Length: 284
View 1 (tube, rainbow, N blue to C red):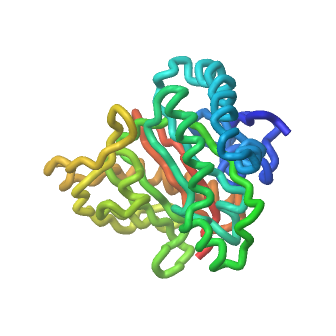
View 2: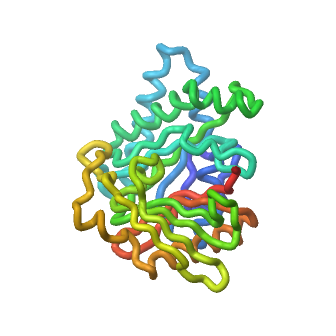
């Protein structure tokens, strides 16, 4: 078992060690643009859980010492912003998505803050929400595996989610895309009414567009993120061009063909480059 795994590793980390989210990203790294990053496998979480409360500060200090040169090597500048995200072993699979149950922290800067957020991900794995989700599905709350992903944060111009089917009707002959200005958190967390696009798969064509009111968007700030009012002019404009909509649709089709299952993805555009942030099978 490796101390850490990288997204572009030639030999991907086993899913029981890196969790569903990171395993999917490693599988797709040669197919599309994914922000660089690494994963702390489940062994660290298990060790942290097994330690007595008064022994955990020592583990955290040792972790920080090992992370410091790694972060400096990977991101060149220790102040570069990253996303710190949980990656549970049974997350983002065909049977359970755990969407929104585990923690994600955006715009984290510096080894101290990154280490703190890694620990927060470990602590969040024992939250009441996660335990209730597991119990509702007849899953054990003991011996759960949790990895943590650290990736470069994409300072998105526009971002959102996309589904390889219509999530309302279940029709699988079309792709549904939701988007907003800024980081995708406003869309993922349902903080605003996003723009909505429907794309028929064959032939690939935008069939409908709905301009959302987009009252707020998520922006990075010095530490973390903030919700900001969208300027009136941008609220009345679509956050994606038709060419960008079709580029996202092609990415969704590629993901569905790869997984052989309906998928939903999180994506971001920055400087006209499309990044894949997450991909998981649709479970409902």
